[in-house]
Amino acid sequence: MNAKNPKQIFEQQIKVPLQSKQLSKSFVAFPWQQLQLLNESLKMFWAALQEQHTAIQELRSSNEALIATCKYLEEERHRYQELFDFAPDGYLVTDIKGTISQANHAAAKLLNIDQKYLIGKKLISFIPEADRQAFRVMLTQLYGMKRLQEWEVRLCKRENTLIDAAMTIVTVYDANHKAIALRWQLREITARKQAEEQLRELQMQNLQLVEADRLKSQFLSIMSHELRTPLNAILGFSHVLLRRFRPNVEQQPFSMVENIYSNSKHLLSLVEDILDYTKLKAKCLELQLETFDLGELVKATAEEMRSLADHKNLDLQVYLAQPSISVVNDPSRMHQIIANLLDNAIKYTESGSVVIEVTELPEDKLAIAVVDTGIGIGEKDLKFIFQEFRQANQTLARCQGGTGLGLAITDALVQLMQGTIYVESSLGQGSTFRVELPRTLSAK
Image (cartoon, rainbow, N blue to C red):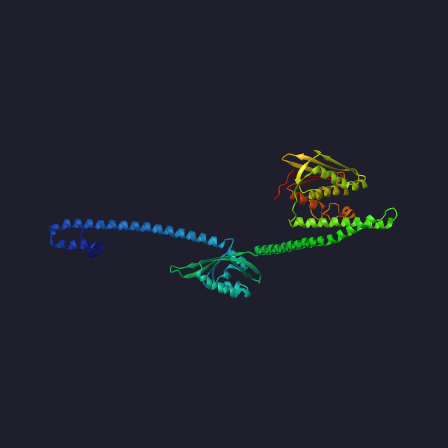
């Protein structure tokens, strides 16, 4: 056993546990126990070294875990910073008084100022003067709010350009639940606000148009009633005068009264059209249903129109699927539909023929078709043919007269009768108007 110098003995005594020092005191007193005590001291010293080694290994593992955690946190911080900097919306971080401490690229672009110059500025400096008082009031209320969603404000960019923005603000709290910061999301909504304003203007214009249409319909209805009363009186008195004159002897006054009568009758038909149109537009026209013979009604209506067809040397023909066709409908309105279609066909046919045909369809339906050899309708005008105050040939319409309501009224009446109306035509090839109706209408 090599002798140790005092320094080595001192270092050894420092490293070993306290129990080893106590054992070494008895080592001098009992020489025969030296080997036994030395062996025990070495065992205790070795155990202490093992514990120290285990502690070092644990410390090394903990250190490696700490390094990995720090690396992960750094990567997450870097990723968050990239998400913050390059987010499509503007993001700001301020203290509770609104002083900016962080700003991303989108916020800088939104406010038209370099990112570095935003730091330290008051957010209120980007609010127009007229809105700052309201902004201050809201800023003082944000402390108690966890989140404020889509607060719409006006922002003043550099060079005094105003924009509309929507702000979402989240309050940041410390461990003691004290508000320490505010996170702001900024999104420009100028285009949306402009679109909303345009939509409001369009809605207002639409309301004005609806009101104007209502007033127009009301005016037409009132005027139609007011005009019809004196016209009926004129028709009545002129008819009485016609019966008193002798055509062969008093030709001039007879012709004058006849002219008054025919023109008054025409004017009354125009007034009736306007009145019917206003009722249909207001959806207040009701059908008076009854059972009648459609075949007889078609033949009677055709005879009424025959003089107009003869005047233009047109061949007016009637074809019926059955001699007697019983239906449940409004005979007066059905007569109006047939008369309108025949009048329209005769008006726009200069030569040839006008044919009205009634056929039976499956599912207890009927079809009424009016076919002419007239001027026809261009393809571009077909989709407008049933619009009110619209006539395909405006020049000819001025010569022929009329309100332009005949087909519009016919279309509305057919719809009221739960039917459909179709038109087939081409320029110079004539036209076919086809109405399909239920044989029996039920009261609603």
